Image 1 (tube, rainbow, N blue to C red):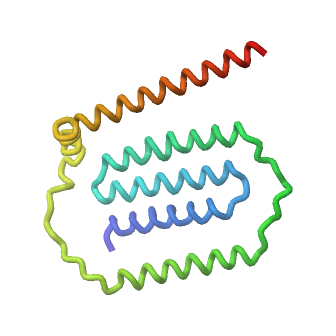
Image 2: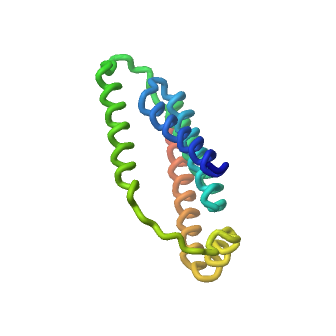
Length: 170
């Protein structure tokens, strides 16, 4: 057992526990924290796979931006409705049975899988390789995406400003 394998098992366990807690917790803020643990542990798995760029993007976009958007959505909506029926105990046992069944199916699917290892230099300076490809080969789609995001942001500002003006008139 190598240190990399132990780190993978720890990160995978945190990701699975975060996902299970996300499903089972009842308070929305606790669910978001469990989701953050899952996102960060997946970023750690990306680091183990020598995909540092994807790991940083995972942390910035998912653990940062998506989680903040979810928190704003939670804070701006009414979620204190207690009229919903609480799930029974059979739901937790069914969930546990489903998780065990899925884990067994995945284990059986990869147990006898024969994957030959091929030497590759893809992980060497992968951020540099992504940057070179992005700004040479894919520069036009990159610029079109940035123009699209800028137009979207301007549209959101115009719509928000229009709503503020209407609210001030009343």
